[in-house]
Amino acid sequence: TNPLTFLFFRFAIAALILILVMAMRRLTWPRGKLLLMLFFLGGLGTGTTFAFYTALTFAPVSTVIVISYMYPALVTMISTFKCKHPITASKWIALCITMTGIVLTIGFDVGGQFTGILLSVVTALFFACYLSFGEPFFNRVGPIPATATVTASSAIIYGILVIMKGIQPPEMVSGWVAIGASALFSTAIGCFAFFEGLKRIDASSSAIISTLEVV
Image 1 (cartoon, rainbow, N blue to C red):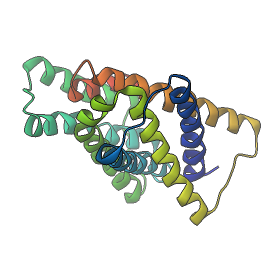
Image 2 (image 1 turned 90 degrees about the horizontal axis):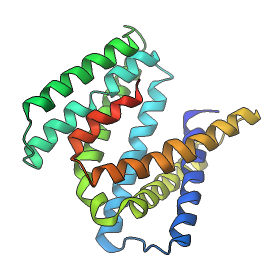
Image 3 (image 1 turned 30 degrees about the horizontal axis):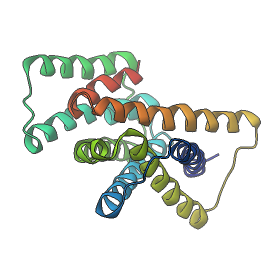
């Protein structure tokens, strides 16, 4: 498949799962300006995932990951200026170890097309903004409604793009299994767990800890 089709099915399946969870638990959907803001954040998340997966087609995986995972540093800086969260000495140390550890774990292949490097930078910037500016809205709505709304908005946007660009579904069963697993674990459960974490610790700490994903 291609990145656009993969991401459409991933978010569409995840959205269906989360809509069922919302119905079963009789949770209320956000409304008004809060709903519009979450849809906007869903659009920002859509840009993040599309930039990342498209970058992988233009540059080596290690290059894309190392550049994309600059986002904890960006989140920390945004949180400092926007939310007045202090950067403690332990957080600086954690941030430096995190960035160094990513390079040591993944390596860094110098190469790939400029488009891939540019899209990797866009990924880092988009996700940093998504996390820093979205934190108060996610916490107001609650983890499950926030995850469901953001995921549904991404599915709608990807659906429109697929209609415009054409669809290229997987030809093998293993492809559908991979998409289903990505929808359930990487999207529905992953986003829910991340938003639950945001209720308990600040965005910069969440960003630093989430880089365990690389390992």
